[in-house]
Image (tube, rainbow, N blue to C red; front, side, top):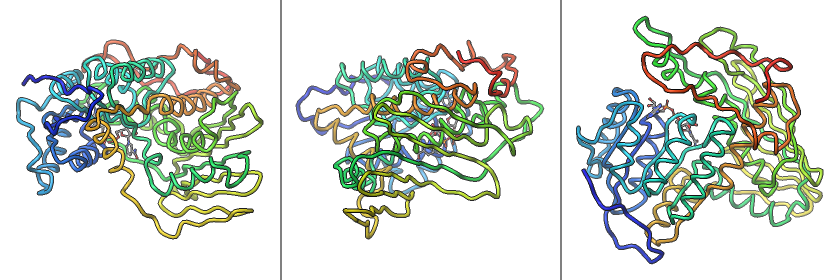
Length: 407
Ligand SMILES: NC(=O)c1ccc[n+]([C@@H]2O[C@H](COP(=O)([O-])OP(=O)(O)OC[C@H]3O[C@@H](n4cnc5c(N)ncnc54)[C@H](O)[C@@H]3O)[C@@H](O)[C@H]2O)c1
């Protein structure tokens, strides 16, 4: 299949059909495809790619089985791509691509999509190390030059209640923000036992969450949402430095790869502000996904899906969650920007939040206080070279503070 790319001209676009492709057909990817199909009256899902054929088929069945989306699903056996290079084949065939694989692959996929002139929805986080950060940031800047839309999956920035309270906070309703404490404390996750016929890479890809080269560890993969809100509340300024603690106490078996199960990070900012992040994935412990923002005139609280409130000199309380679902809103804004011919680019802040999460992880892994310049210039590259299904891929070592070196 070949077609002329849907290029933004800076003028309002015609009502031509926008062809969408999905790279990474898992839970989030399937949801993102539905949201993209819902976001514009003239869109079609024409290509899908995954490293596992059964995952692609599951996602396709789910989309085709939904009577609302089925008429817009135009994927054929010729446009179902499986393998490590599936992303190229999907991207080559579409106007808009949804990048929803594990994040270790994101910089590569983002770079290729921009090179080919495609509009992008890009799930968070956008990299798992500083090398990937620089690669993805360069691609985001290139997207801007090429007038391509790039929307980030940091969904809370698209939530109506979160936008409302953050506008109030950034508008001074609690005075000067002096500290933010964010939590992402949950239980444990899935794990697929190794089968005798699985190669090293097959096994690690089925269990990508537990391998930092693919997930970045849970502080980067999941708690990046909290880091993103923490950064948002502090005006997306660069931290000066951070010092973090972390380890694994429940995840002691080798099936848990090389990631930790808890982190605590303190970020220091130029004006003396502090950001505190606690994240944990452990069974039978108290949970919570909240943000507590402390200002000189009040206090703002954001409870994930639970409510927003400001106390202090200028109190306010959200009565009821309103507005469009934040996951849908991301796609509504992406497609509206394409139709208007006004590219939207979330590149700078999405990469900033991603790097702050990586910084926290590396401080915990090494036990060292790290500056923003340290992490921006880090030469770490977690992705193994020349990935191949039959390669020998030993499990990476578990980081040990005080012994693991900062690269
Ligand atoms: N914004 C949110 O709230 C939210 C929620 C869940 C997940 N996510 C993000 O979405 C991404 C995917 O998470 P998920 O929960 O859907 O995981 P998942 O395991 O359900 O799906 C990932 C899919 O990508 C495929 N894949 C892996 N490597 C690939 C490659 N190189 N090329 C093509 N396909 C590849 C896997 O086989 C799998 O089907 C992650 O970055 C995650 O952090 C975001």
